[in-house]
Amino acid sequence: MSNIKKTSYDVIIVGGGAMGCSIAYNLINFDNNLDVAIIEKDPTYSKASTLLSEGNIRVQFNVKENIEISLFGIQFLSKFSEKMAVLNDKPDVNFRQQGNLFVVDKQNYEEAKRGFALQKNLGCQVEWLNPDQIHHYYPYYNLSNCLAATYGSHDGTITPSAVLAGYKNKAISLGVNLVTDTVSRIMTENDHVNGVELDKGHYISSKIVVNAAGAWAPIIASTADINLPIVPVKRQVTVIDSGLRPTNLLPVIFFSSGLYCFHEGQGVFTCARSRPNDLITYDDFNWDSKVFYDSLWSELLEVIPEFDRLKVKSGWAGLYAENTFDGNAILGEWPNLKGFFLANGFSGHGLQQCHAVGRYIAELILHKSPAIDLSIFSPKRIIKNKPVYEGRSKII
Ligand SMILES: Cc1cc2nc3c(=O)[nH]c(=O)nc-3n(C[C@H](O)[C@H](O)[C@H](O)COP(=O)(O)OP(=O)(O)OC[C@H]3O[C@@H](n4cnc5c(N)ncnc54)[C@H](O)[C@@H]3O)c2cc1C
Image (cartoon, rainbow, N blue to C red; front, side, top):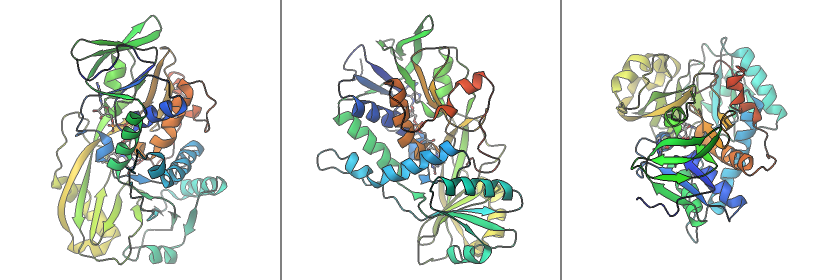
């Protein structure tokens, strides 16, 4: 059998990405006597969304709880290195608070106003910029169709691999068993979860199983006859050399179409965009420059004309675990299967949410009163058909 230490655990977590490792860390941090196992099928994490993420965090959401999750995340990141230190090894997430700039146009004006007011009320560092002020932050941007922008000065970008390594190594140092194996089935007895079956036919038992399998979450859930509204959507990111040499790191810029552009340093930017016809797949991780030329390039040149000298350098593709029901996270115990907890459906914002969500799921499992009430994202809403929409333009 693989590196499993026991045949029975207090909690089994399926999936050892940022979410699974954060949940494990929070559980063991609350109660050091717990026996916790993470089952991760791929120790190289070659397809895990965590390592294929852009690593951005923003407070610019429209649902109060999403904003609170980010406020907690930004605060937590400032002490991540200390909290995740193992002996003298302190992970450096390289949190670059370059700011996020969301362009406001006719399409998203009302929604942006509402979101901005809510963010301000919750104490976020956000500003409403007029076109002249935008020019100051982003001198290359063509302002012709823009009415305004919202700017989150504490928003920024971290290195995803460092977040994963931080949670993983700390959890292991506190006694979590990270097992390399594939979960093939959730085991149940009547209306309660009972453990998991592994690929090689072994069973490990537990009264609590957490589904943290990212884009693969619906496959895991289906083995317990649960139909999660999540699909694996392929997202491509293209790395360009713009030929420009901005003196400072520019904010990340987001357009209402879904196009976004990260300044990585010197002339290098990464660009991507969600498209309605993006492939649903578990197999295709190929990056194809044609997608950039066919569906991003002309829009990019319109909004940032000085990109006319850009050279496409490379790119990558990963999976969004897209929640087709309402686009938001699905958090908590599945109503009809006791002990089966979900931390799923994060689309393009799961990395920034892993700090608050990891703690929340641990609090639910341990019957603690949650520091941030995230019950709005309970899976009960799916059964009751009560979607929680973020808004039309900000689920990225
Ligand atoms: C291109 C791209 C850009 C993104 N940009 C951002 C961003 O800027 N900001 C942000 O916050 N988020 C971003 N995201 C989203 C973010 O990466 C994810 O929401 C987050 O990493 C999800 O973490 P996870 O642990 O749930 O999933 P994953 O990291 O995918 O981990 C799930 C793990 O489960 C394992 N697994 C699956 N099935 C099994 C099984 N049967 N048995 C055992 N193990 C199994 C997998 O191997 C995997 O390692 C981006 C995603 C992509 C693809």
